[in-house]
Image 1 (cartoon, rainbow, N blue to C red):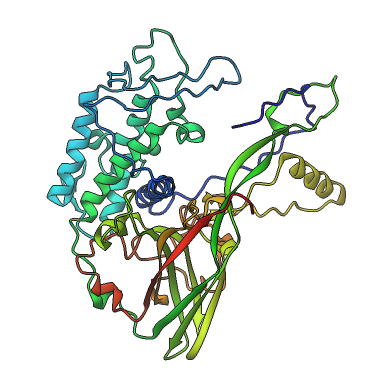
Image 2 (cartoon, rainbow, N blue to C red; image 1 turned 30 degrees about the horizontal axis):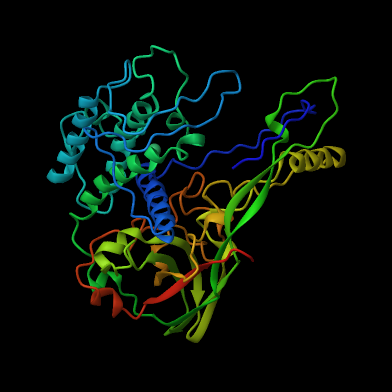
Length: 463
Ligand SMILES: [Cu+2]
């Protein structure tokens, strides 16, 4: 996949760090659920476009079906360990026993069945409400906001470590950590998606216990969405040139050289959509846009209660509607769930040098640093066109956690990360309104503020 580049070591003028971690101060547990939920459904959509079934979950007492050979070395020596196919789980020394993992799962599912989480002091936190997912997410990950780490453990983090160490569970060969033990490499291993399907099903168990939203809760009287016009949606593969300039060692004896790798990747044609509406009066509104697979891998139509859990968030934003008949035009580039390609190290150095020479402050759009890579906004199509439900749900501006969201997009990357140091912008549960069961499609279909139609995503070899 990656072109191998051999080049003399690169001389580096200095070090610039522009890393910025996402805001996990607010709704950390719910963001944990939501970001990983979207990763799993996005990956499943990719499989559907290739006529493959949805990912099955991980089972502690069954073999891990797919092995994985990373063919990757650590910079300071040692290979990322390889796991053969159909490996049976083994306890990992100094990490966890498989029966501990089952115990953690059972305690969490107990909390879901009871509808409350046990705190350290013996009191309860009710979770059968909108906030429950945040409490559960924190307990499962677990994050520092877990209500009771001693009791609920850290199912997710431990599972990553247990999976990462299956090639050398007792440390006999002293192998370095597996790909599953680093954020940067975990998604390479197919077991990542099995693990997260397993976690996702636990979250679903909780969400499915909550009562379905009523028409009154979903309704917003001011706006009727009459149509959504959208450009043709198409995906293609392209060769992306990745700058590896800062991946090499430096020396004073050799001049700088350009080092690049060619990486084939999925991308899509930029698109616009136009939301046609009629509003009674001027008001701020919240808008959520989803694409949901229509058919399963056997080309059978899924019913809404099956496929709504697979809804992919394409955008979530705020706007002002005007009384009368108008439309809101939105570009794919504006999506709040994706971020543009990072600027290359070379360009970063050039901009830094310029700023230093001119005595200026280096202004970078570093706020857009958390989300899916923009090229992955659309799931891959196919030749005949993969069918998706395009759903646009317009609700009251009261759903906004901040009063300026219609005019300030806060760098437009809040979808999976929130806003640095501020409350998550959407007051509704993440995934609303598809996070809860929809036993009767008429409840959503007949809402004037909800619009749905089937669109196709094509995949083109030549673009
Ligand atoms: Cu994970």
